[in-house]
Structures are given as C-alpha cells and as structure tokens.
Length: 253
Image 1 (cartoon, rainbow, N blue to C red):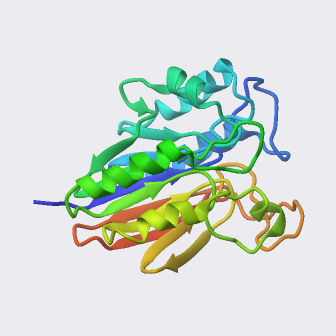
Image 2: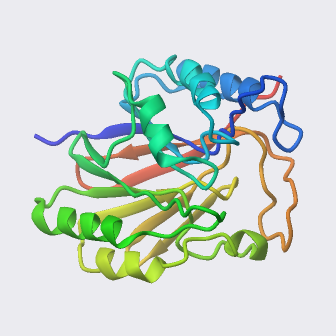
C-alpha cells in the first residue's frame, strides 16, 4: 500500500570554506544552523530532506565538509543536487555518506523522486544534458504509475525577474517535451532563485524555494535583496498523487 511522504526542501545554503565569509551580508553557516534548528523542532516526523543546489559558494572540499557537519544533524536521508556554484563530482565524493547522498533517484512513500543535474560549467545558467534527458525519459517510460516529483537547481519557467531569468534553465522545452507525455509527473521543484515561487503548467505543480541565507527580491530587474528571512519548503506528497506545500520562514528572535 502506498503511503504519503513528508519532505523538507532546503536550497542555496552557500556554505564557505572560510568560517568568517558571508554571502550578501549573511553568515551562511549561522543562518543554516538556525533553519535546521527550526526544522528539527517544528517538522518532526519527516521522511527526507532535499537540498536543491548551490550547497557551497566555492566548490572546494573544505566547504562541503563544513556543510556536511550541518546536514549530519538530520536523522533522515538527505538528498543533494548540484547548483551553478557546485562541482558535481566533488559534491558526490564529499557528501555520499550513510545518510547524505548524491543520487539519481529515490523512492519515498508511494512517490518516485527523480533528481536532475542542470549544472553547466562556466556559467550561472543551467542546462540539461542529453544524458540527463535520456535518463528521465527512460525512467518515466519504464516505471509504473507511481506519482513523480522532479528536482533540479535551475528554474525552467520565467519568474518575472529579468536578471534571474537570464540564469535560468537554457533548454526547458526539452524537459517539458518529456514531462508532457507522462501524467505521473505531478510536481517540479527547484532552487537557485532565492525566493518563493508557485505556479502550474499543464496540471504539473511548479515550485521554487527560498534560500537558507539571503533572499532575492521578486520581480527585480537587477540584483536586489529582499527583507524576508531565510526559509525552506515543506512538501507533503500523499498517496493519491496530491501535493500540499508551504514556505516556512525562520522564526524571528
């Protein structure tokens, strides 16, 4: 019998190797620690944590090791994908432990979670290589009718913010050409945008996630910080294929 899944999405943690470094004036380690404090306090029980990219600010082993000390606080599996600030192979080498994983997909409750690598070296924009598209196509063609959640770093639709949309997924139609053919795809989630986003496309939910550190102002034409606090997304995936979700911000004080 299928069961529901309760998932926490974290994103854009931007951890540095240098303990004193900041991102946009925010101490990313302190901010992440506080967000994790709140998750552990408010969300239990939950089944898994998904971290949708930009785990570190500069891809060096020391930064991933610092991140790992935070993620190891969770007693459930943590699934990580690469963002534009990450290096996928280094991420995999540093974070594949008993509970923290860089994997292609997993099963949670009655749902199949598929992780896509949109990292494109040398740019902040994203791209899904043919190998990733082929893997997704095969996964959807060969599986049963279990509902599917797709996770990637870069946003595949415009969020109405020109400077961020210039760094979006470069080939979103290639993704949608596949997902449009498979009704079991129920939702697509991503990071990168440092802000809340929610929409639908052809019956598929589309969700962007705030950052665990600095937030970007929605609708901005150029880089602009928002005053909202760090946050995460709560996802409840029920056995019928329905998704309920909300953004939780860091409690003040």
